[in-house]
Length: 157
Image (cartoon, rainbow, N blue to C red):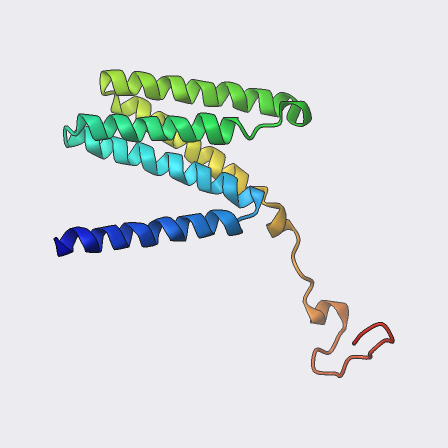
């Protein structure tokens, strides 16, 4: 009785933590979180397949497909993204199809292929993070002494 209560509390804490992370994330970070979710779901499916947990494997693969189709694919702006968005759309469609085939045939290699593609896309996405591009210039590079008192202006309170 107490064990399930503790498990429920831990699951609730994890869910709140995830929801808070999603609400606080910028759009770029949300895409990274979608990649992570799909990668983890596929990893779970591989382990569940090895453990002969067929129903759980199917649920994990369905979760990965849902993230790919309803998260990553749905977030594409095909008008603004042009050829890149169209190519990503085709790649996401391929991934979903491969995961369906992997589920039906217990094909670990197909799951690993999709997981690898997602990792590559995640790495590329992280490399183009706009927040990382905007870095504060250190005071020394601007010839500013951070210890010197700052001159105030009339519009500053």
